[in-house]
Image 1 (tube, rainbow, N blue to C red):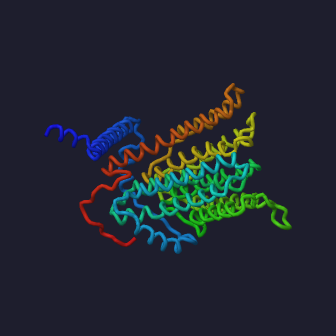
Image 2: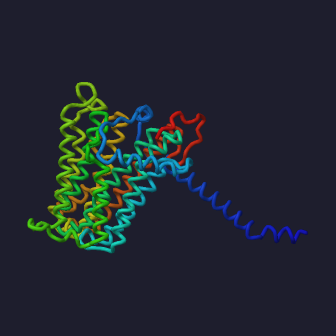
Image 3: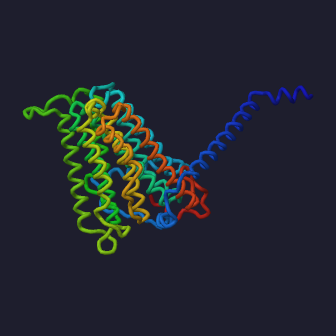
Length: 419
């Protein structure tokens, strides 16, 4: 009888259950250790900021051209999303797919200078469309599951700031704009600035204002570019009849023109004054000061690109612009937190270390190879961005007693089923 019991214990189903149980225990232990490690990091948000974040209410105005049409699709799509799926989980999955396909395109086009396989262009279009869809339904999913919180808005805009960098560079790679490095430089830098200016305006007025042509339309424009590449990879190197201008130059000029127009509209709105006392920002501070971080980063990027001894912009175009894009994402996230918590911005940020190190290395003719330094710059700023974002999410989750990627069981039923 004892032998029979031992054989039963060693049966395949019992072993599988035992292994699954062990795996669960190890996973929970890793999660606990990771949470404790994050909690031991230096505090980012003050008690006052946390209280104001809790009180924050989303405010926006304006509607884009495609939104009325897409809203019907998004309402239909969210119905197929299980109720146990957390809204932030949708956003991060979409972002991961978008980044993955964009990075693949950057690698395969050799820094935006060569064509690549048609299926990579198609995958990049698909990754962007999935991100757009999941990013659009996360708020609807939050209302369906009664899990709305300020963390959702913060997480959504933070992911958008990262996506904006990869999407812009990937589009330039698709049209092989790297053969004109300075044109690609300004197309990307001005796109970063336009996104930052939109949140600068929000920090001043307290409302996120959408134009008739905004993020949704820009994303569909990029998807169209990827589909054209899928059909004819060499299309963008051809010239427009009679004008003798390559199609890729036309795309770059269109990007520059649209971002300048968007930036002009936001700066004009900023110049009209803020919603605070004496026309100050939401934090009661200067409406001009938020221009300092982005202006400083752009200045350092121009200096590093112009005075590089090894021509890093020309030789490593995508990598170079990605480095400064990660810095842009960090200072944009700081601005978003500043707006939602109605708190002043600091003049210094740790993300400035990378751009300053590059300029110092150039000025003093140090022995560090610029290509190697660029990789160190990227790794440091990725760490700096992730550290900041993870810590902000952890502190806000602890304060609100919620989970970032899990829905906490609600004690009250949803009050609003309209989504």
